[in-house]
Amino acid sequence: MITVTYSIPAIHCGHCTHTIEMEVGELQGVQSVKAEIDTKKVTITFDAPASEEKIKSLLAEINYPAEGLLTL
Image (cartoon, rainbow, N blue to C red):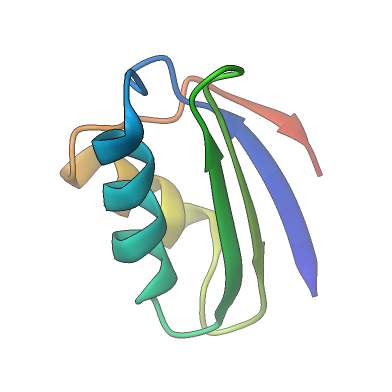
């Protein structure tokens, strides 16, 4: 199990967090997703077949690109 936290500056409201949590949560292998408005961070716990590359690609696709990996 891997847990990562990304900075997502595009998070502005509850709709943003809901969209991120729903979309990323649907990726096979993702165990949990928690997006926060106040900190503009998203924390994701996953196993294979999910990967950081797939997660970051999906975030960019839904217009919430990850600006940086905060923790690994």
